[in-house]
Image (tube, rainbow, N blue to C red):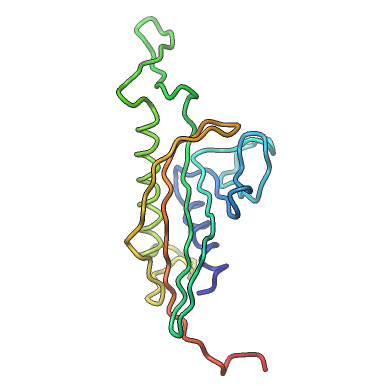
Length: 186
């Protein structure tokens, strides 16, 4: 499996997910926020403006990879985020139909972080075990690809043009791919 195939597979997993709405890839400076355009693929067919970010949003940020004689270890920061109110409070309806803000111990932020951690688990599970129901061959289980399960998870709340919260996961995907001079084009 190539580097591009891994990124494409993660994008495909996000596209198939019922809740995740957007996928992006690149440097942190490419991360799309409310009034920016970046290297992002919209995952649903709903009409939207070019500058609107759809959430939940998965952004794949590549980090340093490692090559040995028998395998390649690709590493990424996978940032999964959703919007929260700027003050982090949860909006609830009161009996009169008006909207009130309720301040639970950690507000809406904690719930969004928890949800995003579940989306991380969903993506890791699909990467690790494949999708046996898929007709796409790249979505099937590949014994030469191993998602390492020593994933570091870091919850966050950040204010860009949008106020977002979520979970950053450090992924390592090992691909068995011995160095082979026989396939070199010379």
